[in-house]
Amino acid sequence: MLSSAILLPLTFLLGACSVGGLLVAALYPRVRAGTTLDRQLELIAVTGTAATLRGGATDDSRRKRAVEVTLREAEEKLKFKAEKRHKPSLLVRMRQADISWSRKTYYSICVATGIVAFLLFLIIAGLGVLAAVGFGVSAGMLLPHWYVKFARNRRFKRFSAEFPNAIDVIVRGIKSGLPLGDCLKIIAAETQEPVKSEFKTLIEDHALGMPLDEAVQRLPDRMPLSEASFFAIVIAIQSRTGGSLSEALGNLSRVLRERKKMEAKIKAMSGEAKASAGIIGVLPIVVAGLLFATSPDYVALDFTTMTGRIMLAACGVLMTMGTLMMRKMINFDF
Image 1 (cartoon, rainbow, N blue to C red):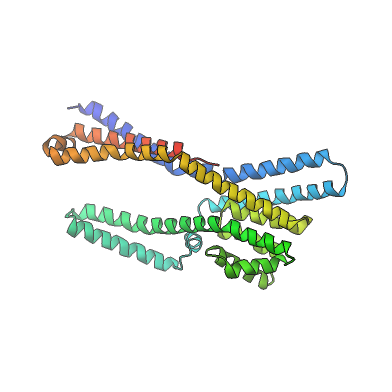
Image 2 (image 1 turned 45 degrees about the horizontal axis):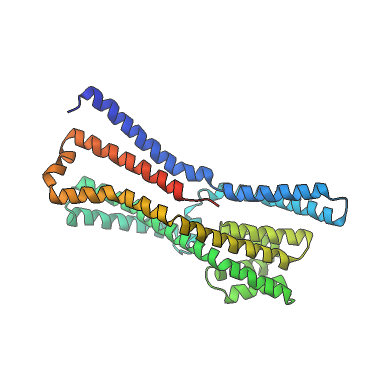
């Protein structure tokens, strides 16, 4: 047994490590958010500036300067929107997830989920009232939030998978002589969800009197993805400076497809690392469960003695930190 003079500092140290690890895991993605898009926009702006300096005072150089100005304005707008998109409101997240709940409905579902979880843990699991209340509050707060997040991410993935096909439709339509508005109407009528509903909203905004470029600029607000931002930038540049829209959108479609290929290649190459991380993370739990099933008295010391509880807390903290580090190592950003 450890003395109280050692237990108190050790307990404080483990608690500080736990809180610090949770804060780093929660805040680090938010600090890193938007860096990929900012780097890409900065690269485009620098490239445009270099091309302008090399050229003379011709029409082509003036057009390049106009493109540079448009890119800078788009970059400022995207930075401003990215600051607001770091933590969108509940209604915005439900709109992006295509969930037609009101705020009152969401909170009612949270209360109902908490009550059901409380009854399950109290009656079926046989826990005490205090423990059941804790599990009920946690379930009521987390489960609806996780459902909205899951539906939102799933809708984003479906949009990213279908969006290059929609751009190809615009490219073919423009090359065949159709105006951009008619191409967008074709997408709103014939493509798959969620691209169909988003472009239908875009057409409705344009039909109500909003300029087409401004209606397209609202697409990244509804779908905060780099693909939608690139599309809005291309339309903004073409509306201000002119040029071949079919060529620009064709290049954009090619870039998006190459990004998908790169994502699939990274997923395939990191599959072994993810499997290894999963095995390493689950193995201690499985071994502890098997030991508890075969020799419960041997494992019970970890729960009944102070030394065992401290060891369990330390192992939990270390396992959590190791799992987060492995997740960060295999979560590639491109």
